[in-house]
Image (cartoon, rainbow over all chains, first blue to last red; front, top):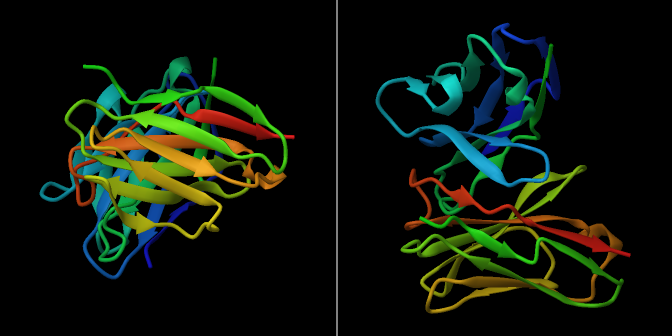
Length: 115
Length: 114
C-alpha cells in the first residue's frame, strides 16, 4: 500500500526567509506526486505535481519541489515566503495499482509565516 | 470556467439522522471523488465515481454511500449519523481520474453532528 509521511506538523518561519516542507512516500511502483495547499475554511488547491520527466517541478506562487526516487522524497521549497503563504500544506501520492483512482495524503504541515 | 461546487457549505445534524451532500464537478470532468477531513485522521478517501460507476472505495462503513448521475454530478449519503462523522467533506473532480490527471477540489461541506 502507498503511504505519505510529512515529517513536520508545524513549520514557523519569518517573512522573506526560505522554507522547505518535507515529504517522504512509500510505494512499490511508480507514483505520481502532488502538493496541495489549504487556506482556512477552504478546499485544497493544487500547487504542483510530478508525473514524469524533470525531477524539479515548478508550481504556482513561487513554489517548487524536487522528486528524489532513491530517497523516496518530494520536498517542497520556496526561496522567500510571504505572510499570505500561511496555510496548511499536504503532500499526496497516487498511481499504485489498485489505488489508481485516489490520492493518499500526508497528515499535513502547517506553515506559519511571521512578520 | 466554474470550479467544483459543493452544497451546502455548512450543515448541522442530530445523531441518528441521515444527510445527503451534493457535488457538481467542473464541466467536462467525468470523475468525482469524495474525501473526509478530520483533525485526528486527516484526509481520507471515501470513494470515486466515473461515468456513474464506482471504481474505488475507501475503508469506511456501509453507512457511507454515494452515486453519480449521468451529468457527472455526485451525491454522497451518510445514514445513522454518529458524532464521529463530524468533518469537512471534500469533493474533487478530474477529467478521467487516476494516474496523473490531477484533481480539482471544491470548498467542502462542513458537517457537524450533535
